[in-house]
Structure formats: C-alpha cells, structure tokens
Amino acid sequence: MSARADVRTVMMAAAAATVTAVTVLVGQGSHTLPTAALAAPPAADAVALRARGQQLGYNLDRDAALASFREAIAVDPTHPAAHRLTAATLWIGALFQQGAVTAEDYLGQARSQVHRRPPPPELAAAFRNHLDRAVALAEERCRAAAGSADAHFQLGAAYGYQATYAATVEGSLFGGLGAARRAYAEHQRVLDLDPDRKDAGLIVGLYRYAVSSLSLPSRLMARIAGFGGGRERGLRMVEEAAAYPSDVQTNARFTLIVIYNREARFDDALRVIAELQRQYPRNRLLWLEAGSTALRAGRPAIARQSLEHGLDMLASDPRPRAFGELARWSYYHGAALVALREADAARRAFDRALRDQSRDWVQGRIHTELGKLADLAGDRPRALDEYRQALRLCGADDDDVCVKEARTLMKAGYR
Image (cartoon, rainbow, N blue to C red; front, side, top):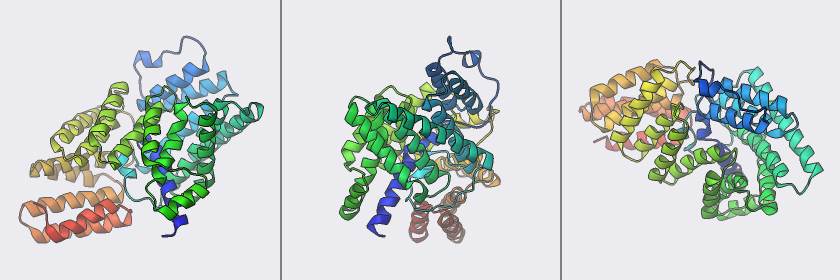
C-alpha cells in the first residue's frame, strides 16, 4: 500500500473512531418517557434544550431528542450547534439501520472503501440539510469574529461529522478527506486561540493518535496533508476532552472505549463504560458494549453477567432495535457460554442469533464459535466445516479479526 493510501486509511479509522461507540448513543423510535424526561426546561433556553436533547439521545430516545433539537433551533435559529446535533442524531439513525452498534464494528483494519447499505433518501437529505446549515452558520460566525475560539469550534465540529458520515454510513474515506482536514485545522485553531478548550482536543487528539501508528514515510505524508502525530499526546488530548464539560464530552468518552480496546486497556474501557451506564441507565447497548469488552479481556463470567442483564433490558424495551441487534446480543452471549464450557446453552444462543438477520461478519463469528463447540465435542470434521463458513462470511464482510482466528483454529483446533 502506498504512503498516500496509508494516510487515507488511517484517516478513515480516525474518522470512524471519533464516533465509534457513539453508534450506541441514539436509538430509533420513541415510547412513553418518564415524566421527568418529558418535562420542558424551566425556560425557553436553547442551551438547556440542546442539553436535554443530548440526555435523551444518549438514553436511546431518538425521536424525543430530535424534537428537543428542533425546539432549540426555533429558539435560537442562528446557532449552529442544534443543527449539528440534529445531523448527528440522524447520522446515528443511519448507522442503526446498518447494524453498526458497538466498538467491534471499528476495531478491524480500516479500508478506503467499504460496502454499505445506503440510508433512506429522506434521512440522507435531512442529514445534509442540517449539516450544511450548521456549516453555513459557523462560517458566518468565523467571518464576523475570526478570533472567536467557539466559532472555529462549531465549524470544525460540523466538518467532523461530514467526514465521519462519509467514512461510516457511506463507507468511503475519499468523500470525507477534505472535511477531515478542515475539521482538524479548525480545532487546532481553537486550541491556538484558547488552550483551555479541551473539547477541541477530541478531533485533534484522535488524528494525532491515528497518525502515530503509521510508518515514517506515511507519517511524513500525513503531516504534509496537515495532520500532526504523537500517540501519547493524542491519547492524552482525548482523555482531557472526556474530562472537560462540553457537548462532546460523552462522545469523547465513547471514543476512549474504542481506543482503550485497541490498546488492550480493558480495565480502563470497562471503567468508562460503567461511568456511562450510571449516567445513561436507559441505554441498553452500554451493557452490550461491556459484555463484548469483557470477552476481549478474557473474562467470560463478567461478560455473561453484563449480557444477561442487557438481554433482560432488551426484552422489556419497546423501542425499535438496530439491524441485527438480537443476533449481536445472542452471539456475544453464546461466545461467553462457550468460554465457560456451557455447550447446550451456547447452542441455544447461537440458534437464536442465526434466526435473526444480521451482518455477514456476525454470522461468520457465530460459525467460528460453533466450530469451537464441535472441537470440544471431538467432532473435527464438523469443526472444520464451521470454520470454513466463518472464513467465507467474515472475509466477505472485511472482518480480519475473525478471518485470522478461523484460520488459526483450522490448523490447531480449540481446546
């Protein structure tokens, strides 16, 4: 791969990681909310309405969140933040429809082009309309006050969502390349103007972290393109953004879950997830995230506990589910049971998962686990057949982690 392609790939990884588990932030649909959640802010204040919308969104009440952002736009139509947050909520709705709901969707090798099922045209159009309006309003603010750190923050944040939409929903890095550069430059400008604006460190730090993983020639190309490097500094900037009160603080915390998983810092990832569970107790997908992280940490008993709690939440939650969500829950639950050597319960979980429509990589990983069960039962021919199915399905869906594991198991088996 060329240095230029390497830069593009890491930029896509960074763009995706910026919002990785933000996928779990905003669900689709709504239902009867608790009285406290429905109560209007004490005053028609746009800031309070935006904060209320985020609280609703992070608790998976997407329709109510959108309504709150619409109210904020009506109260203060010249502020770009409510348009940006509306676009972000619509974007997350598109990811729900594609079934990208945990950090697992972003932990594999990034590619410059990935096949994605296109979102509904009306959703894509609404996203573009609100994001274009956010950009236009932010640019007006920058022209009126070039030295305003907040004006540049608003502009960079809007361009950041433009880049992430292209990388995640559209599966294309190339469509968001210019927006990614602009987002980075604007937020670096914020830090130059006001070093205390730690929220701007989320985008800058994430790209620095991503660029640091490149080869020396690729790092040089990235710097020519306008991106800085520095792994430790980049991670520290994201951590500081996660500790800084702002409308991207929770986003930064979700981003840390992805980075900590990449770094195999599973205790840190689980700590952040636990903090978010306390803050957003109605977000069932946080228990899915905790379970999958515990599995990567080699702690199947903890994973099982988290997943079974989340499955109980799912069963009593009338809100619409993400594409393949039940299959995802059942896959992780079954994987934990395999590790705990509870074969019969694991098979029942996988049977449920295979009956639910889901992404090919999820189906492939289920076949990997079924192969493990066959190996444990001494049925090596059946195990090999399951691993071959896993290779086919995971390879078709660009799941390099699954492909590598299936190949290893075909050679050595599972014990």
